Length: 260
Image: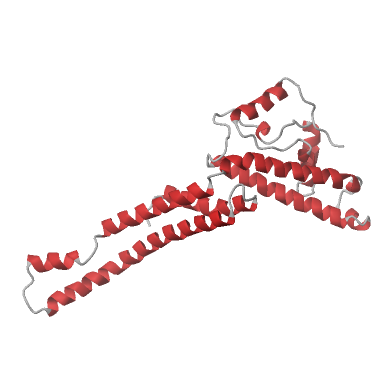
């Protein structure tokens, strides 16, 4: 409905879509009760919109019913009768205004609950990245000479091979989540053009030649993933923190990451 702005709809969708992810990342970000509260506010907002839509479709039928009553009265229709009938119908603009206000307030409350602890996302997701990297450090030696799924089968390492794939998907999902939070201004990001860069995603730089080789591998990004996990993926919680990493790269104060 055009009376509810696209921005309002988008804000509501953000809360609806992102809240379950925040909950899966832990109660420090969003508890089950808080998730349920977000969902209640979302349902409330949608019900206001749907009710207004239904009223808009029904108002012509209501007007026809009122007109039929006036005709059936058998008397000449005067101004008092028309205005009296009109008062029995809510003005559509008023209905829209109230529905819009309900939608906006319910969305505001849903976002307030959903994103109350979003400032802790950088710390928690960085910790998840560290956990993934630590597990890969344990699995890596077992797959030192295994480069394909067929080799994993032949060497009896299918479980380890599959686990790397699972960790890769988890990393991708977390990275997409961080990208969306940044795009919506919910966590720190580079504010000026030219301040973006890999230092927002990794603590350590990479050997460009090896990264290019990994990127060319026909392995669904597996080689690039393993190389990137050695770069200490992170989510800085401020521009200053990200900038400090960029400066250290520029000064050559860190070693490049290369494949083992």
